[in-house]
Structure formats: structure tokens, C-alpha cells
Length: 378
Image (cartoon, rainbow, N blue to C red; front, side, top):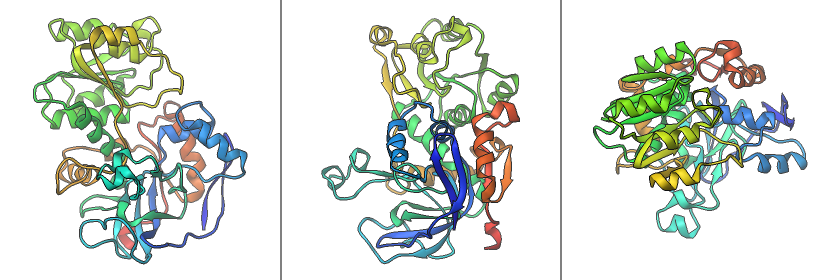
């Protein structure tokens, strides 16, 4: 089969690699649609964000397979039963249209034995610690497979992982009915958080954005107040909340200097906009040694939270991925409208990475998707 191979930072190509073979508790899936994340693009380019050191160590040992945890696939082959819990419905079968959770707990450590897989110290992350879906086929644990319901397209299913992350973020922040939510950044993650906040019962929803087009999308997504990121955001938030500040702030902009606050970071802006005792959720991936306004956070008694990735749910009958897919199927959240660039064939992966890393240059709103085959004809 063919897959994206990394020879060094900024040096990727699509090459022939061995076909995966499923072992106990594993499935091989044919990739129908895949999209890169901004984080993956940053790491492939060599930017010093989280996981950079791990990837550098792998490259020092030779070629690396990296990236590809947002995808829609069709099950090709199922290995013999293995450890772990089978997905609802009796387990995956060849021909099923699915996606998969990117993080798989080991199932054997003390945390897993106590039903706390989120604390597993040996979790495997698809595309990071194991080869991902930047390939024609990929091997995943059967327990991570999530069935895509009828009415959800391959493109939508490939885009559902970031939405599941937004669901995790809002659960972690415990957004309560009527609370003011400030979302810094109107990119894909900012717009997804806006839609989840609006559907989840938040009160005033405020979004900042740099471009007029993205600010318009934030309004369509349900924002009550949309601010130009270059303006005095802190003053506007204080004015809109009678001087209290936002109950919850989601930082989705990446911590870049913000012209609206004399060149300080968006994390600093979040700390200035949150109310006393409020919560700040770090959604964007920051540099490994990004500065933080610890004194201001302490003075505000503000909690700085980091949403988890992967599986997990907040109800006995549904996980975060299942819930995210349900939101899409019902039309509660629009992910299709965030896909503006679609390419054909696995050889288009390097171009998709380029578009996703520099969306402004290409006029892209979200990640560029790559279609490998039409799963409606599979």
C-alpha cells in the first residue's frame, strides 16, 4: 500500500510501505477520507510544539510514519478477539463505515483496571505513537472503532474528531446554563466551540476573530457578540458582562500575540477577560515553553484547564464521538460548512498539508480533506 513517509522535518513523500495485518483485537480499515490537523502540520514542519521532541527522536532513528487521526474509513479485515471491550453492537465487521477514536488506553495498567482509562500512562495515540490514516489502510484497535450513522457523509465523519474535542472541552469546563462564554479565535475549533456552546445552553456567547469572513461565520454559528481581535477585547467583554468578565474562556487561537492587547498573548488576554473564579480552557496547542500570566491567574483565582483527547463519555449509552456524530446527523452542528478544500487521491496528501498549514494563503477555512475512494460505492 502507499502512505505518507517522513524523512525529516518538512520532508514528506508518499511511498510504498508494508500492508498492515490485524492481530488479536485489531482491525484493518480502508481510508475513504482523511484530513490533517493544524497540530500535525506544525509538527511535520518542525515547529517546537507539544510532541516535537518525541517526533525528533523517532526521526533520528530513521523514516517515520506520522499523522492521520481524523478520518472516515471502511473496515477491511478483522483480527481474532482480543483484550478490551468490544464497541456497542457486537463489534466491527468487514464493510462497516466507521471512524475511530485516536487514543487507546492499554487496558492493563492500574488506572485502566480502576476504570480510569483517561489516566492511562501507556496510551497509544493513532498517528502519533502508531501509524495513522495518512495511508491507504491503517491498523487500529477494534475497541476504538465508532460506527458512522446513516446520514453522515465521509467528509463529515472525517471532521468529527475536532467536534468530539469541543464536546470534551465543554464538559471539562462544566459550562452551566446561562453562563457567559468567550471564545478566542474564529477558526475551525472556535466555530465548533461556538456551536456547542449555543446548543449546550450557554448564555452570552462572545467570539473574537481576525478576518471579517470568519467573524461572519461566528455569527452564523450562533455567537451573540462578535469582536475584531484587533480591537480592545477586554474592554468589550467587561462592558458586555457589567464588569464581571466571562465565566468560561476557550482559547482556540494558539497563543499568538494579539494586536488588540499591545502584543501580549491570547492566554494573557484570556486571563484578563475571565471573571474571578472563572475557567480558562486551553484548546489550541501552544509552544512547549509558552509563557503564562501566573500572577494574574492566581489573582483571579482562575482555573487553567486542558481538555483530554480520545474516547470517553458522559452518559452510560454514549461516548464523546458517538455524541458528536449524533450532533452532526441531527444538524445541530455544521462541520460540512467548514470544509472548503477537497483533493483526490493519496498523492495529494503533501498538498493537503500545505493548504492546512497556510489556510490564509489558499483561502481555506478548515483543513483540506483528501478523498481516497467513494465509500457509498464500496
